[in-house]
Length: 159
Image 1 (cartoon, one colour):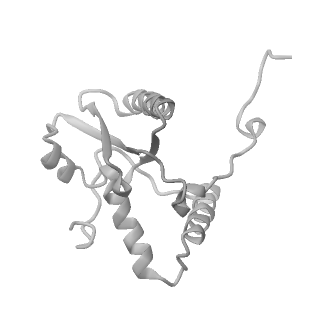
Image 2 (image 1 turned 180 degrees about the vertical axis):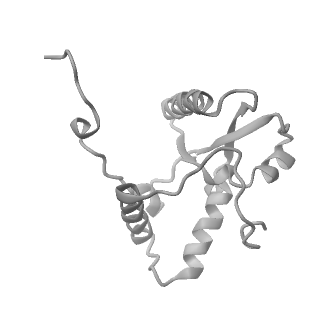
């Protein structure tokens, strides 16, 4: 409802808009995703429907919302939550479950707080949609490109 009413997002954590090369990569990835699903750039209705589905955790049977205590510094807490997020996703994979890490699930924290009875003392950080993957669903065929490891890593002492 808030999305359809165009209420502004009010996340508990900083979520910056992509810029520069990161924005370009994001746009390429979005175009590839929409292409797989047969959604054209001009098809605003289907694009909006996909965005709404994201706010429903892509209709997955399980949604996990990770939070940190507000008394903790945001940056170290987000690092810890990132490690936990990866661990959850890797463990799920071992059980044949698929996951989708999404910031969308925490853009309206007051909605999540009310539904899941999360206290105000917690900062909602990230969400994970989880369920058995449907290999026939077009979006699940998307394979995002990765930067070569040497372009994002400096190796010292490994001669």
